[in-house]
Length: 155
Image 1: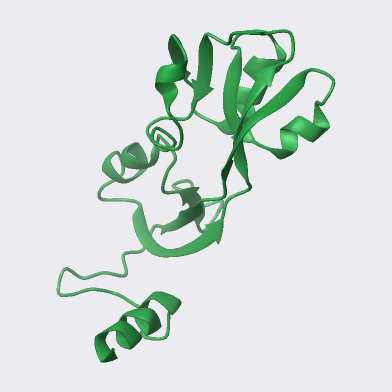
Image 2 (image 1 turned 45 degrees about the vertical axis):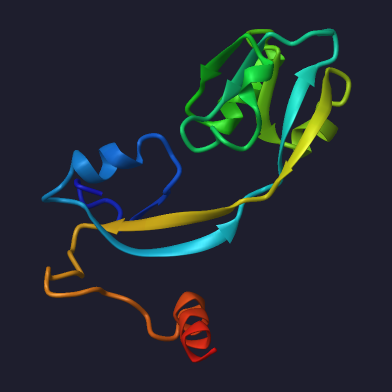
């Protein structure tokens, strides 16, 4: 984006590098919008040959409280869910907090131990042009969140 080959970048607010995206580019890259979308369903998958899993792969801090990680002796902080799957398939971890769809795709080697569900993810849109001017909040009055707050205020 800084090289002007693209106009915008979209990043999940739960991504571990999100603070670096904002903080490391404070005067050049600006959050200009966001949207909310369901994540794919998440769960704990374990390699079938592991009777007592010891090492969990997890995306921290985003997924820290989705399950009780004290069940494992150790956890590996892995920066992306597809990388957690790769480490599971390459015998580098015993279990991983990943998309449940991976259990079907890799049913010969992985078991689905726990279904966690689908969180709502906030996605941040970044551009090189600032939309907030330090004089107030930039918000859409017709957004679902604004409508919900209006209904709650009237109740």
